[in-house]
Length: 217
Image 1 (tube, rainbow, N blue to C red):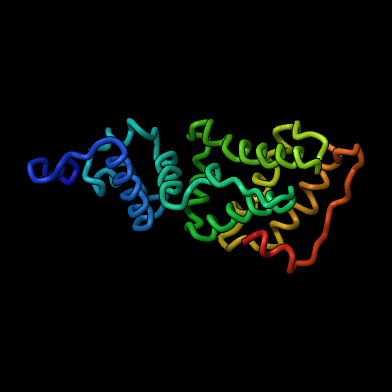
Image 2: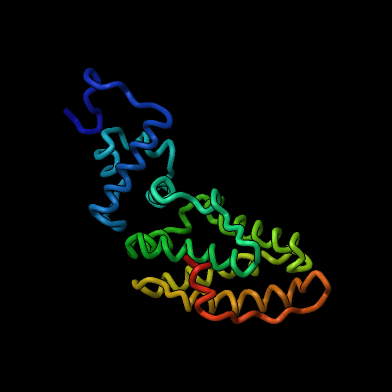
């Protein structure tokens, strides 16, 4: 009997959310077993005991399937946007979430996904922009900045800088890298571009490391 067809007579046919969950679990297991570079839609289909055409109806390619499997197993930041009470804390929390995923997921997966980024649905690439827009709008509502209307490049700058760090290393991203991105690059640029609610340009803060680390974790 083919592993792709399964035992039709002895098991109930899976559909909908149940089938999708089983495919995503199979993709996660296959990823751990063979790595990103050797992952194939055929291999995932065989492990999930279904046909590869079932996968292609949901995900156009390997990269989209892997991202869906990662979200299924680790959650998506879009569902848990940080709200620490201040802009700096929120951005550190966003970057901290990205850094933890980089630490917990094999580097070859992150590097492989970055290489395959042109094959992704464009909507996938706008998720971090949406997260950061929410963070900036909350900051504007609190009066930390005069406006959240910033250019797309400024909005996505922290995430893009962190992705650059991920691309260049196989080691965990340090807390120092995150705080440098936020304190030395992003916040000065935001304050220079948007200003404060009083029209003044605010200097970046430099709290002690002991105050930084709890916000990252």
